[in-house]
Length: 100
Image (cartoon, rainbow, N blue to C red; front, side, top):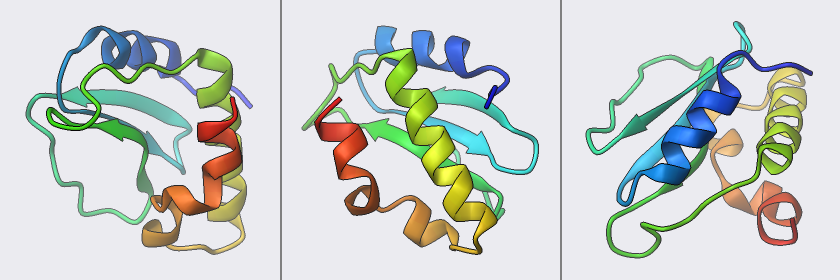
């Protein structure tokens, strides 16, 4: 699966030292990074792939392969009817996030 903008979002996320989230629009297969000022999207199709904050994880970084795997897993669950709350729960994706 090819996610438009994922590589650019990863670069912005990895370079930023502070709060940042990579979002993905599950219908459009498009990703972007919001850094410093995080928006609240009121759409069930826009899901946070990964995030970090100023206090606990400002230096978190992810590889493109990990983000692609995560995007595919979340897209599959989205297509199966899971809602945004489930898709943003790291518990479902622990093997991808913590053992990559």
